[in-house]
Image 1 (cartoon, rainbow, N blue to C red):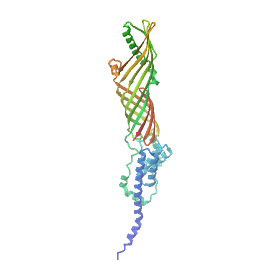
Image 2 (image 1 turned 90 degrees about the vertical axis):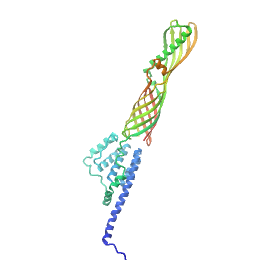
Image 3 (image 1 turned 90 degrees about the horizontal axis):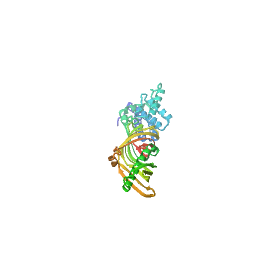
Image 4 (image 1 turned 120 degrees about the horizontal axis):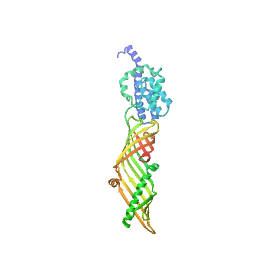
Length: 401
């Protein structure tokens, strides 16, 4: 017959069974909490704050680990902050501090408004912090948790994903309409005078070739009006050195800009012999530079789904283009009249050789105010108005990752 187990062994086994069961249950709970924490951090990184809140709350309901709870409360406070739910953000900042009274946050990794809120809650509750979160796990579960030790540390994502210092990138494509019309009064007189002089000189040379060099100019007048049109499109890569919630970013872009300034109207040249030539002139200057651009942008409230921003940048590229004019009209001398017409086209290289222009590089200054809105998990629509060596109206599509 098999020997019966001693009664003291049976008694110990009966007494330790609940402890073993509690340890297994605690292990399973913490493994599940770690899984919830991974899901929550992933949703947070994708700006899906509602989903992140659900998973962080599951961690709070499941875990007894101080580290897990600290991570979950931190995540909840940030999610509610970005959801503009200040009451719940304060609630979970306080729970975080109850669990970890020495916790600190920095404006290097979080918006200054969140840091101010965190410090405010910490200051208001200085007298009551340090007691830790009150939890009600069974004593056996707590002992089992201690045994898990290092294994628990490896299961949970290391603290700091919410405070991770590391850049984020944004890419965008954009299209713009360009014009100098709002500010044309500042230089309209200079440009139209230059075009009128070119036309009247060409008219005089043409008439002298027909009637002789004795034809001497006396006075002239013109009514050329200025207009402009253009477009711009480009591709940009932007870097946020302070991370996803940083407000400052640095952008590099390639831009193709079409700029056309047009002048049109009558030009009259009078001569000392009483004759006069009146022509309808049509002149333009056009350039299509490809520029490389460096810009700095500041998002005013990066935590908002829709936020305004300010841009300051500079670009440079080769200055190439064309200047041209065409005219048709009538020359009157006494009772006789004859038709005259002509045209001329010059490249910017021709104008440089003649000393009309000196620059061989296109320098572009960019300042603008804009607004961007997050439409779906990092995908944004953008619009801005500003100065781009003229008035710029821009729209674009960007993706943040």
